[in-house]
Length: 143
Image 1 (tube, helix red, strand yellow):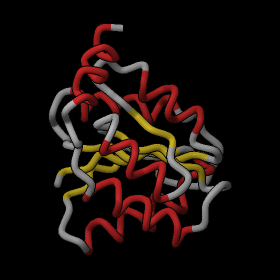
Image 2: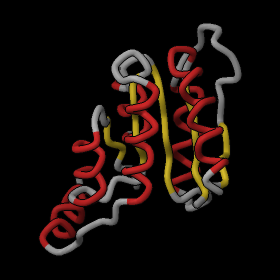
Image 3: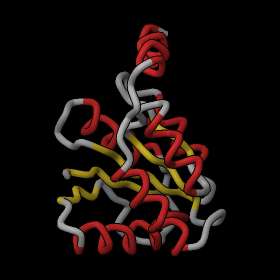
Image 4: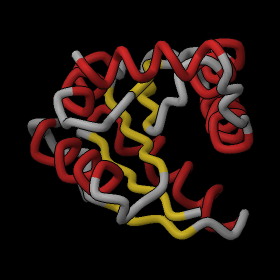
């Protein structure tokens, strides 16, 4: 799977760990930055990653920050993106099954690295259930 990744300084360490995890699993990762733990502005990196997913250049996106909140907000401003802020396996599974989320946001300050890797794995392997959920997705897209 082609995956777009981006973070700010507060999510940089997890981005690097997750990127390694994904590459070892055979995924193709496009890293939109940041490239260091130096202070930066997350929209500069998150928006290009989200646009790559929206344009179909990548199948999914993973964005990271301190809390993941701002990163999800930026990603969701891009038409066609449904970015879910996830903090455990249940939220990640639901984001895929019910919301067909195509981007995942997490906070390095809110979950352990082992939890983050498990969340990523669930997010990438869980299928959208369709059915009644499809109707809701269509309503989201009209908003």
